[in-house]
Image (cartoon, rainbow over all chains, first blue to last red; front, side, top):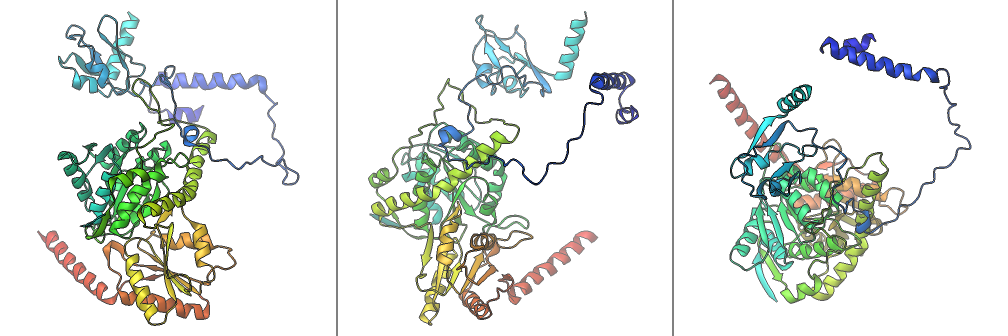
Length: 158
Length: 414
């Protein structure tokens, strides 16, 4: 446990405590396997099983180019995690032009809803802020992501 | 047939114009800029269709080229030297996408120190990228090669981008008589791009930026790109035959000049090889049995042609206009590895490094190289690599160094 303390010395005690707790619980999980992990013998260089190497055949680019012919491939993967700035729409100022922000969004992360207002998918928005630059009535503001998250967690706490 | 005086750059631009390219992403750099300027002029005055867009860097330019090619339009672009290296990340990427287009590189030595004149370290830095490479020696060849390169790139059995290389200044700014083929005949050779399995359309999203983990899929895709490049040899031979039938000019995978009875050979690529050709003529008029091998196709590397052409020769001089720092000449390394274990490999395969940064190679230097390999053949011992650098040049460099030291001292005291 000492080296966990050393490595995390620059962090506060509650973070160190949580890490120690996680490490210990992972260690305890292994208790039931105690004694059943053993070393195998070195693989003999006599009589081994030959790898089934093949001659890879040439395939046309239609098959062998690394292309995905489909949409929404990151639907279940939240790719917006590295955002440092968050675009936030002020719906009071949005004049429902319906196309500028959603068209310029290079990630297709802004969809226009039936009521004509755009909605930003924060699970996939990377925070490039092109929408902020493009919005004609300046209805999209950029706020630091950590502030937005702090605000969200305090709201949840209420 | 129209025959006019054209620079190498002009010939490259004419190649793109005759290929009826749809899209030209562009960024200026010496000595390539004239290509882009010519195309921009033609598009501006309506002599050529298509769209030319200036990008903010070569990195973006090559990305745009690859992305456009991945939508199934015909794309052309050009760069040089530092520009090619600035786009290096994307060279590998768009080749991995299997996006077929043609990129002309006008060779220029790399920084530092910075220079404008040619050698082949820029294009050879892209050697392993997945782009096929075709090296030209004359302005006519530049125009012809751009057309050939599209056939090669777009072939379903290849589908790779192609780099067409010419030497900066020596070819890019030298006017030679160039025959501009008739459009109808070009269209017979190179019809509109049939994108086949490239099927990107609006509202039908595709992803080229695929991530794979674990090695197996990665290995598959990279190796398929390699197999496609290897396959380009027979496609090139077929396409070059068609080209010859239509236009009467033969552009072999490796040009063999006066090789039939030759005991000694020069091996070199690019426009400086025309100097070697002249040297071959003069040496032959003095009784030498000597010839020149000039690879046009460098990627894929046509090792079988080298094995066949070099078999039984007494001595070979590989002249590299490049320097792999810490190793030596790149072409020499590649030729040597092609010959390993070949029973009839020439006993002497000497390496010469010349022509860096546009340094000329004089006729007497070719004679001297011929002499060196002939002497070496008598003992059967290959001499160590020889730098083509003279006492006079060192003296000139010393002068510059002296001046630099004076300036440094003055700056220090100021």
